[in-house]
Length: 297
Length: 312
Image (cartoon, rainbow over all chains, first blue to last red; front, side):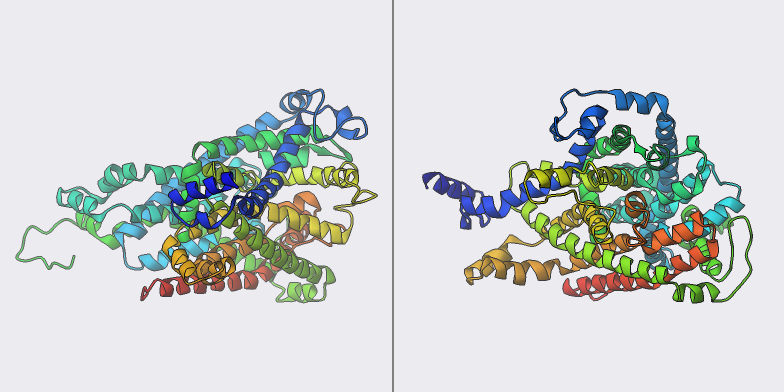
């Protein structure tokens, strides 16, 4: 009891209304559910990782080996993936396509967001709304007409098919996010610059952009992640095995007939997830705040 | 611009007047984004509607056939099954995502050690490519070596393996579970942001008035959270309704079309089957539902402005 009292007093000192809850109650209402949530949300990643380093023998023998653990970890699946499949090529394709699409979208979005938010040309509000609506158009209803267009333009089975179509969902998103960011930059800075004779272009490149580096970073990360994760366009517009992106390649090329190479599949999923997870973990604070910010706008 | 030029100062050249005109500059700045979006978003949207009225196939331009595609779909039981599946999938997954996401948000809103760590870790399912996590679920749902079946057997809860993806009911439940797994983080983190904007003083005032914990939630948290719930859930519904990847990886619409969503059916008929016109018609049939979701979001936003006392 004394310990519980101590905790209560500690929480009283921190303010809020935590003192109304006793420790056992907190365990039941907070810690236990949180633990269950974490286990459920993280288990697939654990299972992915453990399968990726598990020898085939252990993977299918649940009688002699506990499936939750690995007795003799092996790098065989990863070696197979990296040296006997086109996986490194897919990784490279995905990096190139995602980077190009991200930069293209970011450049267009910066200009558009600045124009809508700060130039306030007539109809800017309507254009802003249109951009938001464009974000709500899902790829699932665009991929058929786009595939016709991509084919007619001679882009079928080239990386350009993806680099040019990914901006359809990246630009609205980045524009929306950057509009919110530009709004937070004080008008006075621009007015000063205007009085000093700066052109709009100079204001954008010398004042607004340097001040919005955090916003640009989060928009860039978002765009990169979204293009990295994109599936339906990549599945529809790319045919040759060596030109595929990671998600499509893993699914369509590593699954052969009825013999699933589960180890290699899981290794492929794991390695394909790593870049976005690493990128994300570096900028998680930006990520979370801008995600919530973008939704709140 | 509002200032009329007094006297005749040397009139600025057309170019410099253009550079100062908001409209001309705005047009120039909007050009790259507008061009990309018009060519690759607006035009295809119209083209899709047009394709829905033609009998285009892959490699053969089609001719206008009126509403034949839609007539065919109207009498196609598989199409109606996919509509039913899509609605079932969207409604049940969204409700689960909302309830569990709100619960997780409320937990994360408590005073916790390592709070930012938990917040970061919880987002992982949302960050990782859907297809890749779906492949992990595929392995978890494997008919022979499913870890879930094994664990439940060890605990003595079931006596034979669960056929997760082979049985229509199980397959539906399995894909919904995987979708919920991926969607919870998004809902939780956005709702958490909403929770953090609610002032503590309101809770203190309500507590002084003798409100119970449930009443605190029902009469303080929920009303103040409604606007952000409306927006978050609209996005969530929109993305669930148009989901493609998860189904394509886990079941490809099977068994016996029990998990075919409109998006996967559209892909199967349009791209895999080569009937572009029919596939486009299925995609167009999704639009009314999406419009409903967007209107819902719009009124959610309106309400929010009104609640904040804004006139506009």
